[in-house]
Amino acid sequence: MSNYDEAMKLLNEQAGNKDGLITLSTIALEPGPGGLSRPASRIVDAYYEDGAFYTVTYATSGKMQQIARNPEVAVCIIVENFTADGIGENLGWVCDEKNAEMMTKLRTIFADWYYDANNDEDPNTCLLRVRLTKGLWNDAHKGIRNEIDFVNKTASLVM
Image (cartoon, rainbow, N blue to C red; front, side, top):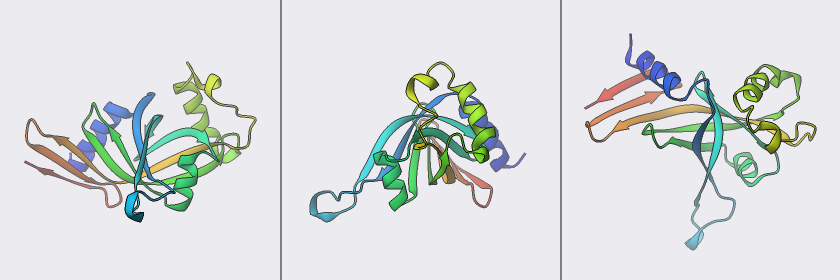
């Protein structure tokens, strides 16, 4: 099994097929001191599948406005020591037919709270996909770094 396949297997074991909390970071619309760009981070419930995280959000929320301006995002799973960069994509209304398969999965995975937090009848309730581009699994205590290139499907173990 290649390093990339091993990394994908581990990511599926750690984050796949379940409701998990990740940190999602975007670039704020307003600059920070001195006019420099600044990050904006928040914790979201997400589902991982095939190199992407999915979450349900609101099209006019701050994070979606930020992603519309700059789709470059970062995610972090703190407990698993996993960080990644990716591209945020608004896939549109959760009831759009093109989202039916993924939304069936998300409503099942998020069943305990989904309908308390979301209004599917509102066309601004949207599906956000974060396609991962590069990632890092870092175990500083063991001195191991696994650098993952999701685009070229490669991974290199650095000790």
